[in-house]
Image (cartoon, rainbow over all chains, first blue to last red; front, top):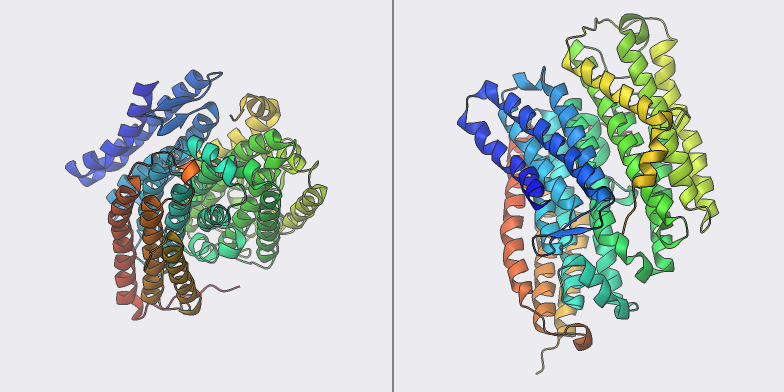
Length: 469
Length: 109
């Protein structure tokens, strides 16, 4: 158990060192190999931790449980897919070695945040992920990437300062750095205003990273302007960090916060969903549309957090994990598709994609399936995560929240269908040929197949195995 | 004159308010970074005060002096983060000749 965790962690550390000792061309394959090993180890970890209660490592700093290993497995698979997709285009950039060394470093930070049980580790891993992802966003060094990176870094630094302030208040009041101890000491401090301020500052800080609506200012510019290959990683894997941190650090406070918890999270969730869906409706650029849809999906995930004080909390937790998997596979697939199309030379707006299905049938069909999964059409993975788990989790404490979420889901059909209409039913303007050897196409096909297979009845089984203690 | 935890905490909250005001009202990237640093210093002050002057003695039986260690660690790590941000700002300045985030909104809508 312990050894496995060490291997998993060290694989991330060693790679960038190896990366620069060899010549340029090698780095991509080394990282691919290491991430492949990491994904095998995470599968093994998944098998070992199944039906085992929490294991504390390193003097209680890291807590390994099945829920965490599931998230770690998703993050690893997501990174692997992004890596495979980057094999053709990104490998030819002049900054490619930096790209390949930053990927495992970021993944290492994601692992730490997923298995976190200590607030000092939270701060360090948080900064590791943040710094690596600022550099990753700006790595192409053209105007759009740098604009995105500047905003991302600025918002990230503000988030980090809020995080430190919140941690300072919580540590100062409870006198412990272990989250399990903090919860115990915090119980008598239920009405202490400083504790509530600390928790709210932490929620603000994590919201910056997830892109929850009052703090979403950076997200459309980063997701909409930077090269889609990089965004597939930022949107798919780095977003997991905020959600995992919220789950590990804030979620245990649900019982202490009581009613305030439901109010805070329902306001955040409603504003996020509504803003994301309505702003996406008016977009003509598909990449920016997906950026706003990504905000909306963060709102759906927050529903699972809002359910924490009610009877449906377990559905909420299972829904969070399932929806993260829907989100990772769909977003990575869609952004990789966009990267593929922009490499071929298409414009990424609705006119540019019109009639795509005549020229590139496999890509179009996969794109449509992934979009349908994000809508939540029944046989696909998105249906399982959205309706039976996330939306139903709040029904006993806040039925109005479920209603608003379903209305929002209806609004979201509006813009996804525009893409589908453009790709399938408009006259053909798009040029391009797809070749089976293209790595992007392989990734697109893999994500589509996973979305379909998990949708065919496996998702409820996965959800039933996920319990959170 | 007695120095109490409440006094330092109110100083720290005033610094937090100044920092938030700076972030909200300024649009220059370097000014926003400086405002973030003010919040950061407020956080360090809170950390050090709360780890040396206990507020709730009952919940803090024997507090180890981790507060100072966290503060040192945080200063080092935040320096790295600011370094990356400043280097991005310099690259941006070379291309656009200004670092005004409000002007950066090229893709509106």
